Image 1: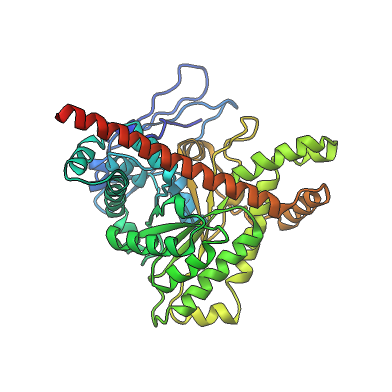
Image 2 (image 1 turned 120 degrees about the vertical axis):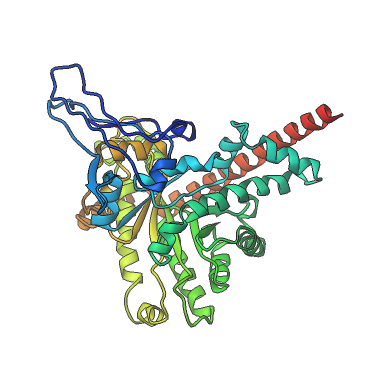
Length: 440
């Protein structure tokens, strides 16, 4: 089966290459090699995809070659097929320096990037790539939090530049990079509005998404920010009820904007998946009956399937048609938290069953690697809605309260991001103190 080198920032530190070495076993052997000639591919660092015999004794080739008019080749992966045949945009859920490490991923079909406070905490605290800029910021008199935002904004701006061509080719439909407001504002309606306006202004890129959490306090913020013509990635959605409130905030914001052309105000709604199973599985194990145990690993996909059904309902009818006449684009569903937390589950569990048009799947390294390697590209999101409804209702009958599940996961998500944010500021303060000692 094809395998992909681990997709982390440090994984792409060489010249662009694609190669395959045949297995030494008795399984069928296949070798693939070709030159990359596009500007992006020439600048890319290495992305190694190997093709060898699979466990079944056959082989699977996920890298294909297509020639342009000049006879040069461009590589294709399952990510290209996902977008072109099913209308789902694959995004990468990670960002760190050097941002140019994204180039091989873009060449492989990635069409956008999501970030969050935890991602930046890991990136900045585990790398010296930020040290020089941080040193200059501290020397110029910046306080720690201001310096943090300068580091983040530079990464977001640089990433936006890399995805600009995708944004332009799709007329603002894709190619976005997401940056989140401070997690300390998760329960501050007005503070979130002001932070979103500020981030939008200082990043100053057409393809930036300002991330706002879908807390009860921030749902009104979403409406206000959208009404100001700012594109938003609504994050930390864990329940159907809150998702519907998020859709309504988007529609209310478009209607309140007063804009005659709504085509450049877009949004995605980030519906979290794997964390739902993590919590619900624990509840099912506490119940302990055969029926309960049989439902483990099914809650997240079932709820996500019903979210897509709600999406189809809300983005149709007279109200939506009136907005479409002004150029409005649907608020796409974005599947977040797609990495598998339980090793007993298939590693593409939160990608393969959630494929459908006008959706986004943002994948961290593990999920992206797995899907490129052996993901299945076909429309699955609405293949069996009745089964999803059956699972959802069965869980309710067992005593699972979906709104309580959503509320708990939201609290955990906000708290996790706050801890990452606060931890990074402490690390940066320690680094600043060290720099001051050295300078003296």
